Image 1 (spheres, rainbow, N blue to C red):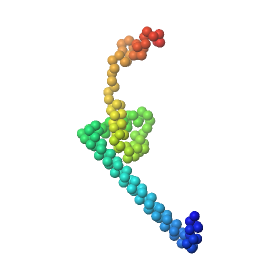
Image 2 (image 1 turned 180 degrees about the horizontal axis):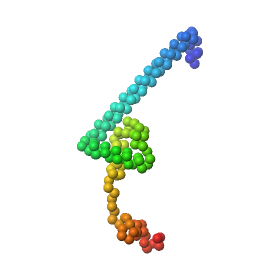
Image 3 (image 1 turned 135 degrees about the vertical axis):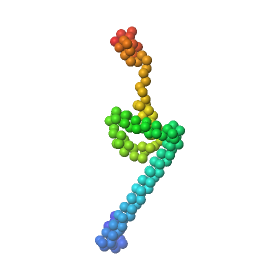
Image 4 (image 1 turned 90 degrees about the vertical axis):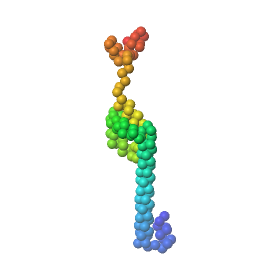
Length: 143
């Protein structure tokens, strides 16, 4: 395609090479500008999400330190249990790691894993050593 165009305009090899070099320089500049614009847009979006979290009555304001602790608990406890490194998880999310919905999810899961276990009366072995299921089905013959 380019060869035909070069012939049509009477370009010798040196002239054609200059046109190719110019095209490559323009393409590189366009790509660089697009990448910079994308990065700026992603940073602005992440900043807007951070501000949204700051203003959120459940996550932000005076609760922000607690939210961060809960997110940290999620990243250290939940991810560890399923075998994912916290750093890999955060890297995979990139700027989306501060999306309010993800922060809310991580904080809630962090709270779940950091709370003291609930001691439900009668659910453990108790004095008889039987489980709740064994006591529930005591007369069923399923022992």
